[in-house]
Amino acid sequence: MERIKRFFRDEEGATAVEYGLMVAAIAAVIVAVVFTLGTKVSNAFQSVNASMK
Image 1 (tube, rainbow, N blue to C red):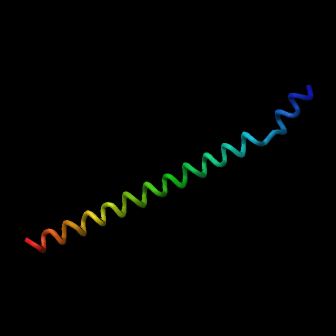
Image 2 (image 1 turned 180 degrees about the horizontal axis):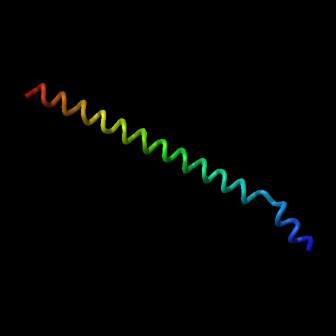
Image 3 (image 1 turned 45 degrees about the vertical axis):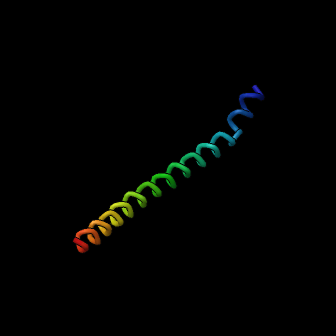
């Protein structure tokens, strides 16, 4: 019975899940920023290429 009580009081698993969620959120933000900046940089290079022709 004591082991069951300790299992429910243990919060290490919850902390690991919280860190996992934070890492996933940070990764999603990085992907969104890279996608947005990648599009803008691509457009800038296309503009420069078109003006050089």
